Image 1 (tube, rainbow, N blue to C red):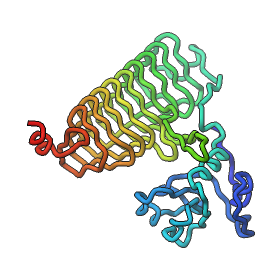
Image 2 (image 1 turned 90 degrees about the vertical axis):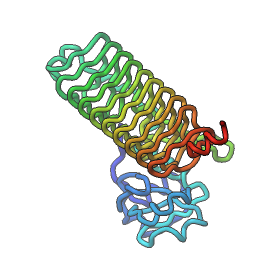
Image 3 (image 1 turned 90 degrees about the horizontal axis):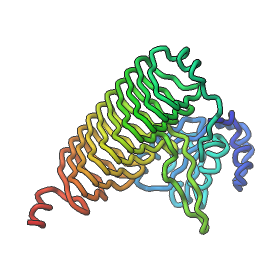
Amino acid sequence: MKKKDILSLSDILKLINFKIKSSKFNKIFINGISDLSKAKNSQITFFSNIKYLDKLKKSKAAAIFVANKFKKYVPKNIIVLKSQHPELDFIKVTNIFFPESYFSKISYTNLTETQIVKKYPSLKFGKNFYVENNVKIGKYVFIGNNVTIKKNCNIGSDVVIGSNVVIEHADISNNVHICDGVIIGKKGFGFKFINDKCLRIPHVGKVIIGKDCEIGANSIIDRGSVKNTIIGEKTFLDNFVHIAHNVTIGKKCIFAAQTGVAGSTSIGDNVVIGGQAGISGHLKIGNNVKIGGKSGVVKDIKDNETVMGYPAKPLRQFVKENS
């Protein structure tokens, strides 16, 4: 991914035709974008959802796009950029720093079979293996047939990757098993309707998979839009599981087949989810939670709860209502 160098805040605002002007912006330099919680004092972020007010108050960003009604919540050390469409302006800035953030192109810098053997002497791989030359692969990795590993990837040791797999923008730890047909690191389903126009949200995050995980056949894990999508260590995903962008999953979780988790939801440790369950976006699921099969989760769940049904409710209540 090509990334722009440092730009002054003044130059950035000119490039996106932003109306606010100030001479002091010429001396403020920005080197990238980030989400509220991780933004540094050299980065731009945005705020548009009151649910993340706590993160806004703790943010250390240099500047923030924010609607006029929310500007009172912005910390005094952050430059307020009042905007009618904060997310749209943030998207424009993201495209300046990451002009290839919508679609990842093949770089045509793939290694030949001879180069692969020389660079990764302990690697075993099948037919039709495509790997770009900046990929890092650990020891004793097995890769099946028809596999593509594109740029911005780090593969640990003792990893098994099945056939017909595509991986990009991902860090995969040791002893991970990726079954056939998996896609990791593609752009998530992000868009914004503004003035009757559908705008794609750029994705610049990665997928981080902890050690000792298993990703079931034909599952898909989307890369993060601004921050990373994270799968905690020793977590097992069954076949046909979809993890959307910016989702965080804790350690030792088990998701049965056809589970879907919408964007920006956080899931704790030791969570068990039955087959065909769906979890809405921007939710917080606590530790040790159990979610019954075919349940629809539309609100936060506290630690140690067991829920079932649509909308998901405490198990005792569900049983009572359906007995």
